[in-house]
Length: 306
Image 1 (tube, rainbow, N blue to C red):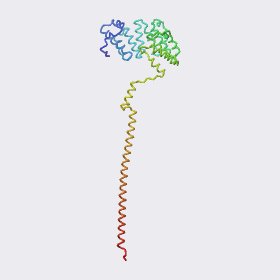
Image 2 (image 1 turned 90 degrees about the vertical axis):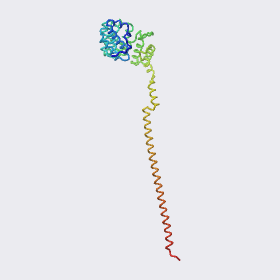
Image 3 (image 1 turned 180 degrees about the vertical axis):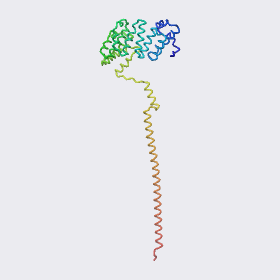
Image 4 (image 1 turned 120 degrees about the vertical axis):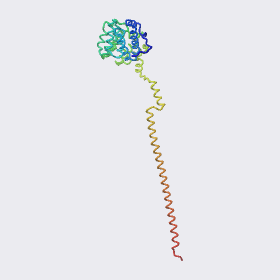
């Protein structure tokens, strides 16, 4: 797959670059450029990111960072079985437990929430940092919800991290998950309160808490772009409904004009007939007068005198 010229490979994390030093220079550069494309596309175009990760994996499958990147690209593309395999490979190479929560979430994605819960109770969880432990709690709550255990999911999310007033990178997501679980359980007032708290802590817009809060408040958002397009169509006379009305009006007017024209023709014909009738009547009267004069003249000549 083509890679933009502005991608040099130097954009990758320094730790990943350090891992790639085990490769020949030209190969390391090519792998790094593909990894940059994975990071660039994974949110907006997961399938595109996945395609670049497969190239990097073909070139350097023995590099843990490459296996991890391939795992996250597969995870973003909802290829959970493949993602889990890559995460396991990366974990074997490094011995790192950081991937434990996302591995458990892959189990959820594969329809095995019970397995995810087992992983949430494993000793490896204690080796996670605070962010990792919160992530594991989120996965466990999700698994409870998968199993229809809403109340258990709510209890799972109730923790010191949820109650804390300090804002951490994971705070918004934790509050959002708690609010969503409350809403699913029918506890709307509490859900609204926690959606509002999620909005307060979501500085980078990682959740749609503001939209959920507005929805609970009955606020409807109008797409200004669509509204402008509709107004433009109306102003330009291209609105389909208005055009149909105008077509109907034109048809009615044409029919009216045709009727008026026919009536005018009929009126003219009636006038012509009236004129003809009048002329015929005049001719008849003239003939009658002539006959009367002829009758009077004939009587005087034939009558006896004296």
